[in-house]
Image 1 (cartoon, rainbow, N blue to C red):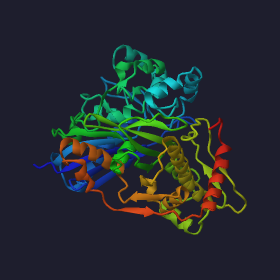
Image 2: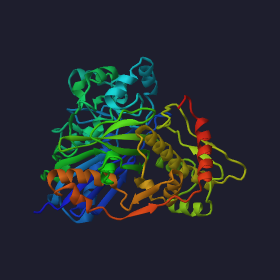
Image 3: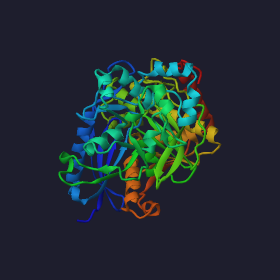
Image 4: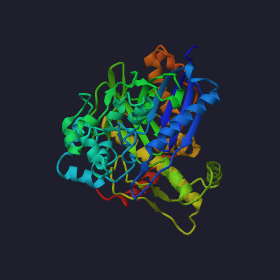
Length: 499
């Protein structure tokens, strides 16, 4: 039977999607299943790894059923995933030893501060391109090794394995035959030297994570293993390839193949990522260096500005404040409220990312008066996303000396017309939003598909890019300056340290 399709698994912070993609690069079917978010203490965020894996199985079955195809028609399964989220599991039982600690979680902030005061930040930055921050994975693994019940005994017996979500899924899908990750996910752990492309023994010692727990690191387009879980495809063994972190997957999916091309993925948080070519650019001032992808044994580098909370602000306004029920209702309210009237929401629910990197900052709503309505607060939540991306882009331009020509946008929140127009207005640059929201999944499919010959070349997948919507800036410069000035004042009121 002809292998005419790819199955792309997109495991994000809020849920799991499975997409069936054909040779024309079209999404033939998809299934989306949310998973529960756990907040055991203020600033702590957890997921259940077993729930996530069960949702991978379920969403894959549903997508195949919707497409009307069987696993025998799959050329490969690809994976893109939420980055930095930490999992530790027992290699014998196949069970996690603790809940997954999500990238947003701040429980290791104090420990990272200790490392900073001890003078370790420069060593971490020079090797990994990252600052010392609870956002990244290593301190989370260290915390689990210190606090999970029975973990020391399992470690002594050689039973423990560590990984980010991609590694967890690879291990489960292959029934324990594959313990691996790709360059992009490894580069977000604070343990991977992005220059030598190896795990760093000194950093493992600093964070208390034994080197033997860590997965093998491969290029994103390699074959990582094969599906062996009979619950998934029975006896059908499908190669697993195209493994890449979700933000880098979106960069590839947006076809930002040339140095200087940039994208913003508007998800739970937002990653603004720029391709910088074959050599890393030293990071600093809130910008991090990253590996964009590994392909054909060669690595492409990027710089990234990370925003901790963006689309999740709208979820908070909806679920916690109950200011609207559906996004359709929200849009109707905004039609009659074209301005926030000086209200600013600073969404520092789990601290602030670039350019501030203040783990102890907390959220606030400022500028309210007696006439403030729920529509003003909703608009302020939407605008907070655009303000943060504006800050990130300006940081990126200053650090790289490369002027942004246009911003390519993807992710669920990019469907919001009000957000995209306000983003273009703040940047004073065109924002190009793909009509396909699932760019992370497409990026993993493109990488894996070219890697196994499903498509013959990058040029061939270039023809699969469908239409896009362009937003041109319309705001007067003086109004833009006033908006940004108000935002900076609002942010300064929540900072606990100098930006």
